[in-house]
Image 1 (spheres, rainbow, N blue to C red):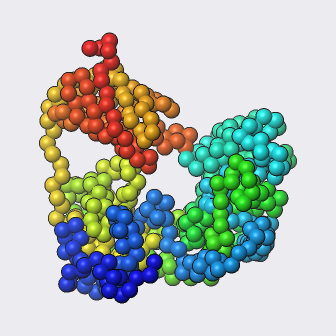
Image 2 (cartoon, rainbow, N blue to C red):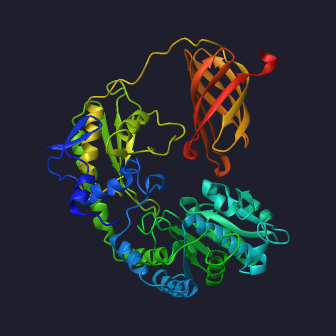
Image 3 (tube, rainbow, N blue to C red):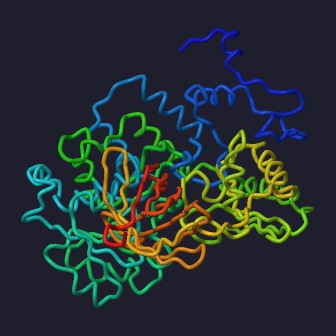
Length: 529
């Protein structure tokens, strides 16, 4: 889109003299410069859609945009658009280059770390055999089990389960020995302290798996890229990294490194090749951008980055230190490889500052510009942070944003708004069985509540389509709040119901966490009326 200078200036937001109005609070810029014209133009790309940009003080979290792409990565992606290439030939060259840089036998670029897990699983199930690839999702006659240590159960294992395999959880070496068999396609391990040193470390797993020819896939999505690769050295056959985290590559890119035969089989399983994983597509732009991010990783001054992040946190600490009842603590990442960023925890005395962390998160989220700290933007961290603290991650900030954060946190915590309200007596006793109906995006589903009520407080069970889970909540007058959660085996089902009660019926809105919102209504079960 070509814009003349006058139209461009008309698109830019109006900035009052001496500061910006942020949610009714006048923010003085003091020592920092106001946002650049370039930043304002970027904001308008989103603002024109009615979408509010934000300052990301959470870190490399996907829901708020993950990491800031490196300028060199953007340049490589722009350059890649200027020419066409045959993608198999491109990946051959990139795979060889990744092997040179990382020390792995080979590497390929995927459309994210999760995609890399899916493609790696397909590689282990099919071995790159096109007949078997076209048989998926029918696993009849194929290796259809993936072993996973109990410490590795997360939501991200869904990327492996998408192939149709059955997850076999093990907690001890004896259980691992019993689980290994002719149906075992691979072992999936989440990297961390336990994968490095625990009784089911990659090394210990490899001692049992290698003689049987069972490959090990290490999920190191948020880790720094270390050479020689510690997971491959321990005995893993494959390792996965995210491009949109510390590598600062394309958000929709990832890396799969390791055994050349399996990495090549994984590449064959996805686009540009046809089959069940055709949707796991990565273009020439992301391929070249991801390669550039890897090359830049070994050129970046990581100690200087850490120094700058700590200076930004020091500025925030200095601004907040005079607030009565408030304390701050900066923690360093230590020797861990994952999410190696410093973090600031701001804590306060709730008697002097009557806010929960969840309150503070929402107050910052509702400002203009929005500021995302702790779990803000995830639409329902469960349970909500009711402790008097927030955390601030500086790794995705731009210079000057730390000053905005400092001023806004100071404004909220030095003069906190009154948000608590006195409880009203409940208008009815909800104890018993209730028929629940939820209207999702494209379906109407019947579920159930069972309540036990003591005064304003509710306990009980919410039975959903997938599983039953405990619920808790309150009834203040006619206003109801119910929270239920199921988070076992990597599942993330966190619901928050709000609404109005009237005699034997209730209705309202439910936050489904990362899955959006829906409407609901419930009525007391017929035999209890």
